[in-house]
Amino acid sequence: MKDLTHAAEVALAAGREAGELVMRVYETAFEVHYKAKDDPVTRADRESNALICDRLSLAFPGVPVVAEESDPGAYAGFAKADAAWFVDPLDGTREFVAKNGEFSVMIGLAVKGRAVLGVVVAPAWGRTFFGVVGDGAWEVALDGARAKIHATSRRSVSDASIVLSRSRVSPKLAELVDALGAREVVRHGSSGLKGALVAVGANDVYLQPGRAGMRWDACATEALVDAAGGRCTDAQGEPLEYATEELVNSGGLVATNGLLHDAIIRALAPMHHA
Image (cartoon, rainbow, N blue to C red; front, top):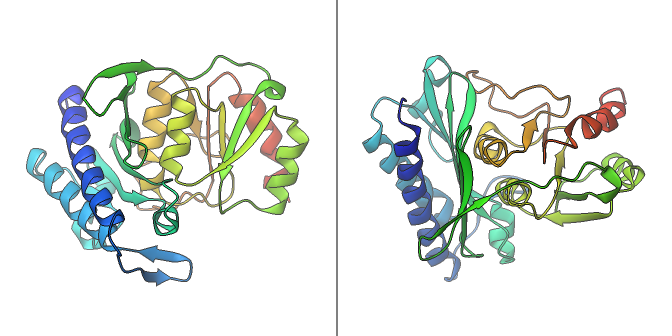
């Protein structure tokens, strides 16, 4: 995958098209099924998955597309590939079902095991974000106009705004965040949206120690935050590895403006020894 600019344009177009599809379903009386307890899936998840996989496979034949609603056989062997796409066709399905607008379409690209490109589309907000590591990050308006985005430059945790999961905050994490004494703590659905809020500077820190979804919940977020001048690692400060068969983010996910990263990782250390 030599031309990341071209890859970004293809992913951006696919993400925005999928966002439109998702909104068409959102505005209907759709059915909700469950893959497992508390794991809903809708027609929007499946149709967005099919659309994105189709667009990416057509433009980049031979590059595996690791997508949440695909049969794992469709991306078998991806860990050995030079590059792989990671797709969450509807991140925040619970929020989609609750009709609170907090969901996104996420498309990430990893090359040699590292996240390099991320697209996060927030269709209910009418906002789209994308970034290429080393090149920069942008917000794309509905009319296609692009504005450069950047993470904040706050250096003090006491001045920081921290965003946490709307539905997955353990009592221990709540206690630890309280002890940090941050200026503001907010709750939000969708990993992709929380990453985008850090990338655009609305929040300084996104924390999800413990299990933090799957690699398709992380790749676009990581690339977008990094491209916007921030930093994204697991909860122990280690880089996320995408050239691995292990798809669970078992080490957690922490995205920050970069300047606060080390302090946040240090503060999370007690959770690993609990």
